[in-house]
Image 1 (cartoon, rainbow, N blue to C red):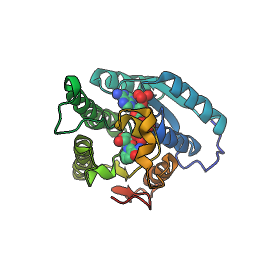
Image 2: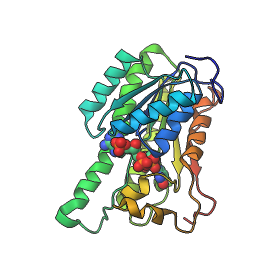
Image 3: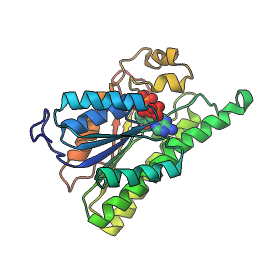
Length: 263
Ligand SMILES: NC(=O)c1ccc[n+]([C@@H]2O[C@H](COP(=O)([O-])OP(=O)(O)OC[C@H]3O[C@@H](n4cnc5c(N)ncnc54)[C@H](OP(=O)(O)O)[C@@H]3O)[C@@H](O)[C@H]2O)c1
C-alpha cells in the first residue's frame, strides 16, 4: 500500500468493513475510508456494483486495498460466513460501518396487496435492525480479544427522532438503531472498553433510497421536492469526523439535515 494518499492516511492499515457499499452513502464512505488509508471491505448483494467500486477506489487511491464480498444481510449465516472470510483473507476488523438499510412502502394501516406490507416490515427489521446487530456482535468478537480501539458506526436517520410521512415502520427501525447505539455504548463503557460506538442520523440524502422507499426507482426525485438534499459525501464527512476523532472523544450521534428540509 502506498503511504501517501489524497486526504491523508489517518486510518492507515485499519481494516474497515462497510455494509451496503454498492451505492449511495456506503459507496461514499468506502471512498473516504480508502483515501484515509484503510483496507476497505465492501459488502452488498450486487456484485457487479462492488467490482465497479473496487476499480474506482483503486484508480482514485493508487495502492489502496479493497476486498469485496457478496452478502445478503437478511441471512445470519451469511453474515457470520462473511466475518469469518474477512478475518481469514484480510484480517480482523477494526472499523465497522453499519450502513446497509432500506425503507419499503409498507403503511402500518394497510396490509398491502397480497399482504405485501408484512414482507416489507420483515425486510426492514432484518436489514436495519437484525443485520446491524449481528454485524456489530461479529465485529466485537474480532476486536475485543485484541484490545483494539475499534469503531462501530451506525448509519441511522432523522427517522430515529421523528416519524416520516408514510414511514411508520421505517421510523420504528431507526428508533431501534438509536436505542441500540445507546445500549451498546453503555455495555462497552461498563467494560472499560476502548471501542467506541457512534450514530450518524441524516435527513434526506440523494441516493437510491428514495426509489426503494417509494416502490418505484422513477419516483426517487419526489423525495427531494422543494429541497436540496444532502449528498452521500456529506454523510461520509460526518463518518470521517467520528472515526478520526481523538480517542477520548466518542461522537454519540450527528444529526444532519438539509438546510431546506422542513421536518
Ligand atoms: N437516503 C436517505 O435519504 C437516507 C436518510 C437517512 C438515513 N439513510 C440510511 O442510509 C443507509 C444507506 O442508504 P442509502 O441512502 O445509501 O440507500 P441506497 O443507495 O439504496 O443503498 C442501500 C444499500 O444497502 C444495501 N442493502 C440493502 N438491502 C441489503 C441486503 N439485504 N443485504 C445486503 N445489502 C443490502 C444495498 O446493496 P444491494 O442492493 O446491492 O444489496 C445498498 O448498497 C440506510 O441505512 C438508510 O436507512 C438514508
